[in-house]
Every structure is written in structure tokens, then in C-alpha cells.
Amino acid sequence: MPVDQYLNAAREGLGGNLPVAVGAAAAGVALAGLYVLSRRLRRPSPTPAGPVAAEDENALAWAPPEQSYADRRESVRRDGPPVHVVVAGSDFRNGLTGALVVDRSTGGLKLLLPAGVAPGTTLRVRAANAPDTVGYIPVIVRSSRPEEDHFVVGAEFEKTPPWNVLLLFG
Image (cartoon, rainbow, N blue to C red; front, side, top):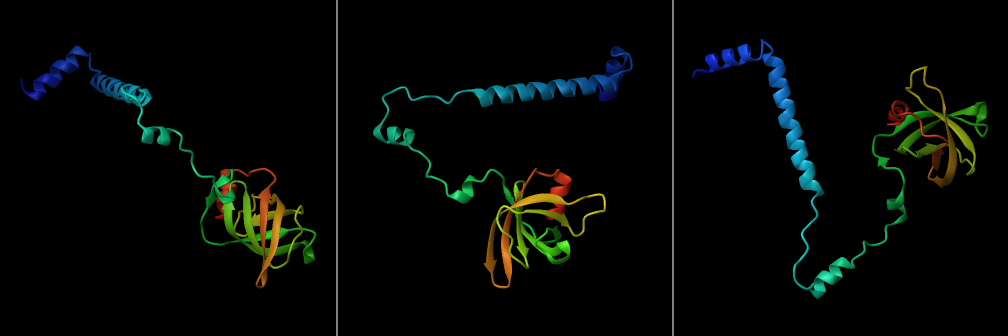
């Protein structure tokens, strides 16, 4: 039977709803595939039938090495180019100063400032290229150290800003 005759017979049998039937069949095949995959992923790994060898016992007793402090962070750091920001705080002349964000995460920012700021100080940070509808984001200074002609300041967000605002920091 040629393909045209087969499709016409199928169209007549389905009452003219061939696209709906084809879509339903494709969805059924996809769901069946997902079901098979999920069953395969949940299957426990086979255990050895005989006695466990000494090297297998050592492998079972293995513990990962202790992580360094940097690896235990709650939020993931994101690389990117330095981003110009405006920092507002009472420690600055005119209340504002320019800075660079050199490291960022969902938990905070690493800033390069022209002046040092005491830990515990609350600052407000805004990307220099942010639209007027985006306000200043409050951060708490956690660390401040001098480096050459600037200060490296670690600041934590008081409350994690929305993703679209985080992206403005690079």
C-alpha cells in the first residue's frame, strides 16, 4: 500500500484529526521513553555475590579530603570582567564614590575602592550602567584590606537581589 493511501485511510479513520493523533502518539512515545529512563536511573547498583576483598573495604571506607575554606562557600562565584559601580556611604566625600566589582556571587561582591571601609559598615551599591528603575542594593562590609593604591573590600548582600539586578554586576 503506497504511503498516500495509508495516510488517507488513517485520516478517514481518525475523522480528519491526523495532526492531533500524530501529536498524541509522539507524546506517548516520549513519556514511555522517560519512564524507562527513570526506572533505569533508580535501579540499585549490583552488589558483589562473594566476600568483599580488602581493597574493596578500603574503597568503601574512603572519605573525601577536607575541603578548603574557599570550597565551602554557600554561593558560587562567577567570573567576569570588572564592572564599574557607584557606592554610596557616609564614609565617602559627597556620600558617593566609584568602584569596580572584580568578583561576584549570589551572596556578595568583591569591590576595589579608593578608600578603606570598616567591617560591619553598610554600603549601598548600584551598577553604573543600571537603568534608572534599579535602585541601590545594600551590602554589609565583611573585610577590607589595602592593596597598592586601592582597597579590596568583601561585601555581603543584606538580601540577595533579583537575578536581573545581579547580572548588572557582571
